[in-house]
Structure formats: structure tokens, C-alpha cells
Amino acid sequence: MGTDHRIKPSLYAKARPNPAGTLKGDLIVFGNGDPTINARLHGGDIYKALGPLVSALTNAGVKSIAGGLVGDESYFHGPPLGSGWVWDDLEYYYGAEISTLTINDNALQAVVKPGLRVGAACQLALEPATAWLSFNNRMQTAERGATRKVHFYHPLCQNTLLVSGQMPIDDAG
Image (cartoon, rainbow, N blue to C red; front, side, top):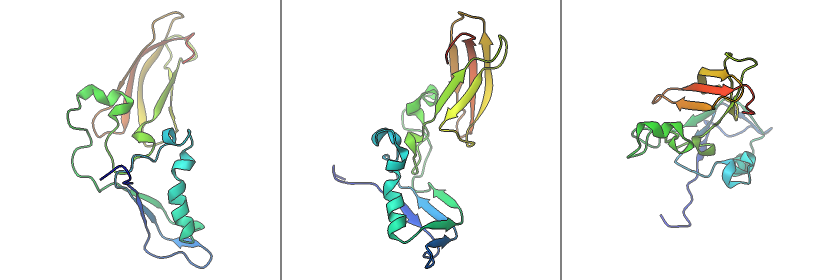
């Protein structure tokens, strides 16, 4: 492909925007493997990463969308895991499932903080927040000074992350 080759997602709609700039119907983002739609490569700013897509819409006269935003990741065929990956690779950021429509490396950051009292469940959150992935929280708040132990398990092709272990009540998270 060469070092100058750029992979770019495509935008599709059933109709052009009306004279007021409204696109009536769904906007389809067809991914073809662009790994650069991430904040990491744009100074921590995801909006800069999305700039080329926004520019393409603006240049097409789109000011608003009266429909849904549909992500199409059908370009790649095959398993969502890389060749040679082992089962525990999914616990780490580099083990994100392969997709042709990747945002922020298909990785989320899990934030874990102790609960309000010893024995309580720990507090879990995702950054950026999303409803796409949920937690099965098995983390418990341990006594002051206990050893922090956090384990993640992401079953293949499921949208639930199992989190187990303990965090001392005096841990900052």
C-alpha cells in the first residue's frame, strides 16, 4: 500500500440533504479499517479525529441529520480476534476486538474505586461512558491497607465485562 496510503471510512445516505441542509434518513458510516479515528493520535481530542468526517458532511451541505447514525463494520470477514492471540489478551487494551469501524482503538478505560464501606461492592465506570458494555461487578471493598487485586474477564463476543478482586477502602482508585 505504501506509506502515503490512507484508509478512510465512507459516508452514505439514501438522499442528498434538502436546501436547508437537513439529511432526511439515516447516515451510514462504512468502516474499512481506519485505525486513526482516536484521540491518542490527535492530542487527546477525539473531535479532531472526527474532523475529516465532519468536513465531508459539511462539504456535502449537511447541517443536521433527521435519522439515525448507523455504523457498518461488515468490510472485514473472520473472527474478531487477531491471529495468535491467547485467551487472556482480551483483559488488556491491546486485546480489543478487531473491527473495521474502530473508535479510540476500540478500547475503553475502566475506572475502579472502593465502595463506601468494607464489604461493599466497588464503584465501576467506563471512560468514555457507554451503554454498549456493562459490568458484572464482583469487586469488593477490603479493609484499609489490603492489597489491591483487580481482574478483568471479557467473554468472547459478549458485551459484559466481569470484574473481580478487591480494593482497600483507603485506595484512591
